[in-house]
Image (tube, rainbow, N blue to C red):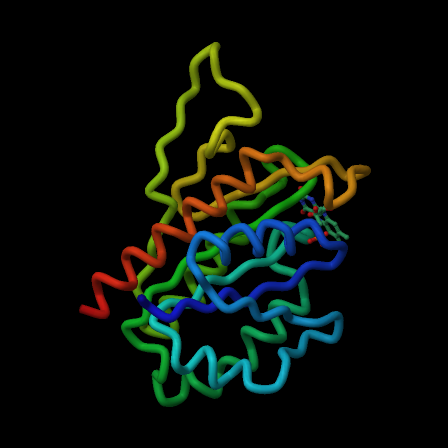
Length: 184
Ligand SMILES: Cc1cc2nc3c(=O)[nH]c(=O)nc-3n(C[C@H](O)[C@H](O)[C@H](O)COP(=O)(O)O)c2cc1C
């Protein structure tokens, strides 16, 4: 089995639920970025040893939270030696609006992964857009770059959409599968 790490920030617990689903699917270690933008002791070692790294952040003002960005800037240390080169990378985000500019967040994750010399894996999950489509369908938000979740601004973390969480779980499983193939 490949070693997968999910490193994420969540301000109010919504993205944390998606992160948990992704980690369940990937059999991954969860690394929570705290309210000050710091990761727990040992997290950098876990990331260094990982075959795959999955980024997660809520979309705030059309991109990652400042806490995630602080983590990204701190990753300049492994970047100096290209220590994360050729790892598999993926990312997910969650926001209040159906669109909400979530793709900008995923695009930022991709850029970060490319700076590290990584290999990006998207959802690989199909979707449909017929009249029969339901909001609870897997990948209802039809994202190829990485899972997107949407939860109303006045809804609690317990009200995350089950289809969005299942999308996260399936994506995690895909990252585990792809990383295992590359590991050989
Ligand atoms: C500072 C801030 C900026 C936000 N910007 C956006 C945004 O650009 N697009 C959007 O759809 N939702 C936006 N939201 C809503 C959050 O993405 C949404 O509430 C999300 O579920 C929060 O996830 P969390 O509980 O993991 O922090 C914003 C919320 C905050 C607090």
